[in-house]
Length: 129
Image (cartoon, rainbow, N blue to C red; front, side, top):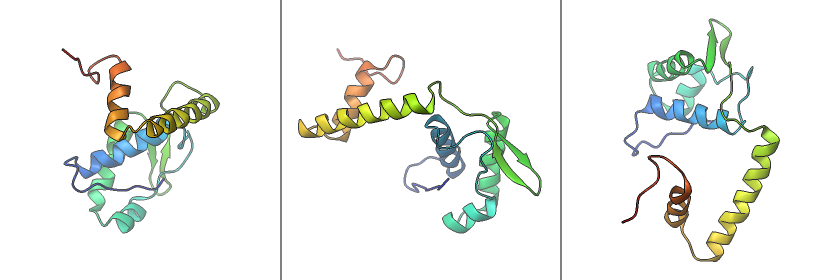
């Protein structure tokens, strides 16, 4: 797991870490039993306060996604996402083809995001009048 920060995003640092772990869990990049980087490793790489990393890991633990073993580290307890890694790989491949088609048609990132949002149910979908 390789964390990165967007310091201009307006999103709290600890939440960025939580979101990145959840993203990796959804994509199957992290699986049950995998160890997260130690707080010391994250602090050294990102130059952030150790309490920020610990707060993120506590939040993940509170949500039942990881478990901390004192002196051993923090380990993934369960994954997220409903599809198997094989199904996700197949869908990712199809999505990559779709993105390529969109780029060939002259669409940019925002155009593609609007298209995706238009077919997703729920609050992420923008209603058009």
